[in-house]
Image (cartoon, rainbow over the protein chains, first blue to last red):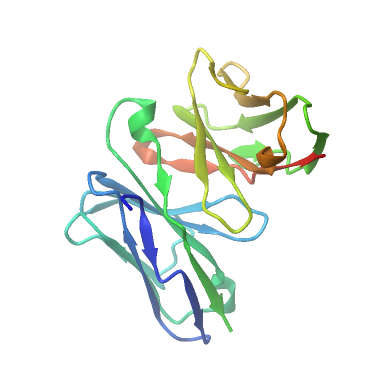
Length: 117
Length: 109
């Protein structure tokens, strides 16, 4: 399977714990995005990497959230001191930098569903 | 006002009907637009890119109206399998990505 993969698919944690999610993009894609989606809403942009550089961060990304993409391939999203309001689906997407719409198309992974108790 | 707005629906239509969704955007700097389809508890999947001149893919037609700042999606001859949530997306400078809240479509036998 050469699509975007995410691990774990589901995570249940207690409030105050730290969690880390991983995203493996499509191998030739140099752009990687993280989103959060809650029920009845569209995905909300969190952050974006081009290669290993984190170029954009949403105001939604509080100090408890950090993302890395150290080698420009896989990425991790860590949430520290989780709160119940962090419960959501965390989606990762990747795309290829380029000037055409086809190249800008983002392909999504299956997501990690987080439940904070 | 949200940067990308969609009517959340639900749109309940009979099989074979034609249905149209609109999506308005407020950021005139948005450059690229897409329609994604999302099934319940699944990830969004690309349905169509939206070209400035409009484009068609089988039963689906997408239009972009920059003057009025909206994009549209037309689905002809609706199938039961078209039931899903349809998300419009705008991408602006510096890869600023904004999704709409989605429009839910239910095709009824």
